[in-house]
Image 1: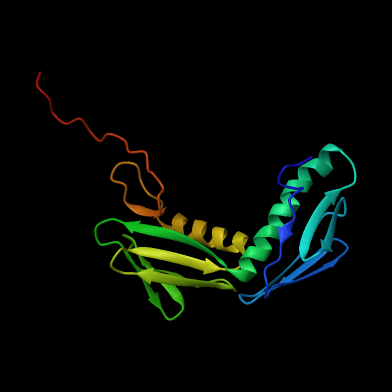
Image 2 (image 1 turned 30 degrees about the vertical axis):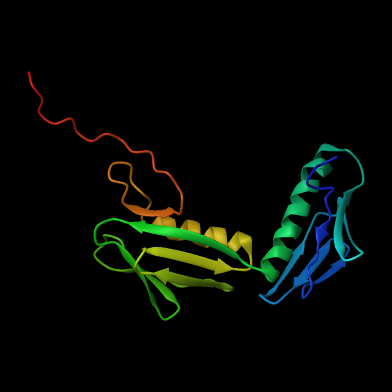
Length: 182
């Protein structure tokens, strides 16, 4: 049995979970999420907890068991506390700023790159530490948005300039050796 799949998902106060067959609707203070899961997996609401079970030990059902439970746990966590990914802007003259709700990236191009937030996403920019925070209640959308921002100017291996995740290590390469003694 899946170690993650057999754990029940606790529903905190202020969060409503509605399960109808394979449809799960989660509503909380940060927002609401709806998702349809595979009919091979059974989802039930018991004693204020969401329980995910599978009918048999077939490979397809085993693969979906833990994943379904993890996605439901992320939905519950997202609508109750939300998710955050921090990006760092590194490079001489590189910066990010908010223009209204849009994120403007000044990362070495001849023009600023404007990035409008998708639905349910907001940005916070700290000019002093040059950090961008991507905030939202849907983990999938928060991660995808952060990846698209990073893709504007990924960190390069020679100087390390670019946009990277907080804590991400960039493998550095040696530059030219230069003229040495013969």
